[in-house]
Length: 190
Figure 1 (tube, rainbow, N blue to C red):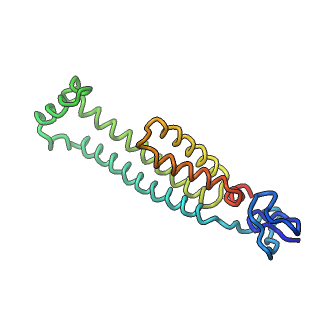
Figure 2 (figure 1 turned 180 degrees about the vertical axis):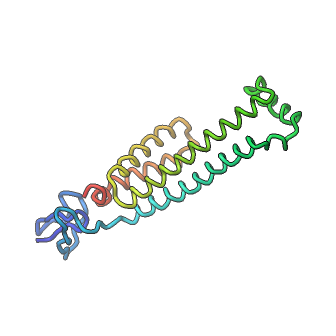
Figure 3 (figure 1 turned 90 degrees about the vertical axis):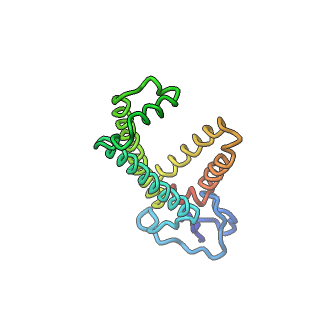
């Protein structure tokens, strides 16, 4: 009896596609090595590897950006504002319409605090990105689900900024399409 090389289920002799995961059946498929009910080693699709690596790279750059924001906030709170002449800072603040009422030292403290909070949030997002990359790489169901949900949200958000977001919408549609392919889904749910 042949077995599906993607999900490990037993197949009918004449099957052209696996009825469980939809993957095409190859001619001489051997039964997978089973440990209990689970496969010993799942075969990660190449596209999943690419998605996980890209998520890791984006998370690395996000981490650097968050650390830079926290560093700038630390520098400014340690007296870095003294490097900018106060008159020049007030002129720059007056040019920003919404900030023109915030002149003086308090705006400096507020700006420093906002930079620190944004930096910490960005670092936390980077850490979550690393966790997502690991989840995609290792075939965790929650990573598949979160990626599908976030991709759908990105498509909806992109609709509000058309035509500039057309390429990002197409990328997220391609991600959803790829992750919903039977052999990819079997990697997470097989």
